[in-house]
Image (cartoon, rainbow, N blue to C red; front, side):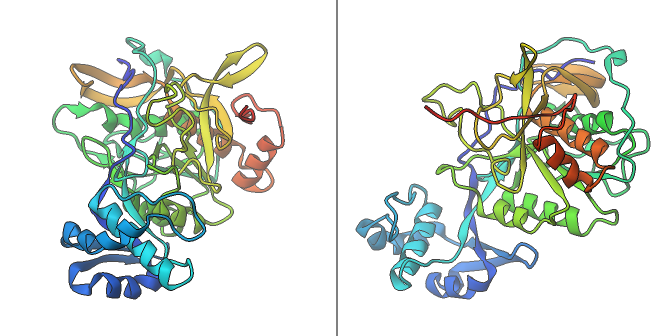
Length: 411
C-alpha cells in the first residue's frame, strides 16, 4: 500500500526506430523506386490506417546518396523552415521529400518516423510518468468504492497489461491483456492496473477492455504498435468500444504530429470518444526540453480529448502544476494523489524495492485522463451516448468531476 510517487525520468522526445519509417501505402512503389528496392524491406502494410512500414537495410549508405541534395537546400518549396537532417534516417526522409517536391511542384508523399512512446511518439512510445512526491503508505480502506453508472458502455484502454488476478468486480472483459510478473516488477508495469481502476471507480457498471500495448519492464511501444492497437480496439473487438483512454504519449522534435498516430485517429468512428493524457511537463523551465507548452501526441490531435489535472482555486479549479496550460488541453479533472488499484508484490522504484499490497496513490495526467474516461462512461447513458455526454460538458453543463479548460491567449 505504498505510493508509486514520482518518477523523475522525463519522457524521451527524440526516440525513434533508427532504420524504420512509414509511407502512405499508395506511394510505396514510388518511394521504393527512388531508394532502390534492394535496399528497403517492406515490413508491414495496414489497410485500415493506409500506411506501410519500411525497413532500410543500411540507413547510412542510403543517407549518403542524398548528400548533394541536402547540401543544396533543406527547405521545401513554399516553406521557410529547414527540414531536420541530423540522424541518417532524418537525412533519408529529408532527401525523399526534397526530391519529390522538386519533381512534382512541391508535392511529396506522406512519410515519417516510427516513433517510440511511453505513452508518446518519437521512437519507442513510453508512459507518461507519474507526477508528484511520494505519499507514503496507503490504507486499503482509502480505495474508493466504484460509483454506479456506465451500464452498456465499454471503455477501451491502451496501456500496460493489468495485474493477472484483478477483475474490477467482473467488469474486465475476456481478451484483456494480463501482466505475468515472476520477479520484482518495474514501477511502470503497474500503470495500466492503476488507470483501469480509476475508470472503474467512476463508472462501476461499465465494461473494461485493456490492450497492453506498452510492454516490457520499460513499458514502451512504437507509434506503429499503438496505432494498430487503436485500430484493433475500435474495429475488431467482439464488444463495441465507445470510449478509448490513452494514458500515453510522445513528443516530436519539430512539434508536428506523428504521421502514424494522426492516421490512426483519423480512421476512428465519430461515435467513439478518444481521450489522452495531456502531459506532465507543465513545470518545465523556459529553456528545458520539452518546453512547458510543447504538444504531446496523441493528446494534441484535433480528434482527441486532451485531459489535464486540476486543483482547487477559490470557488473553482485551475490546472495542476504538472498540467501544461495550452490550447489543446480540453478538460481538467482530479489527477493529484488519487488512489487506485496497483500491483501486489515487490516493485522497483528506481533505487529501492518496496512491497505493494494492491493499492497505491499516484499523480499525473495519466490518472486524470483515466478519471475523465470513466466519468464520460458514467454519463454516456443519456442522449447521444459518450459523444453527446462530452458535448454537454464542453457546452458548460455542470459536473462534479469534469471541468472545461480554455488556455489564456499568449501575451
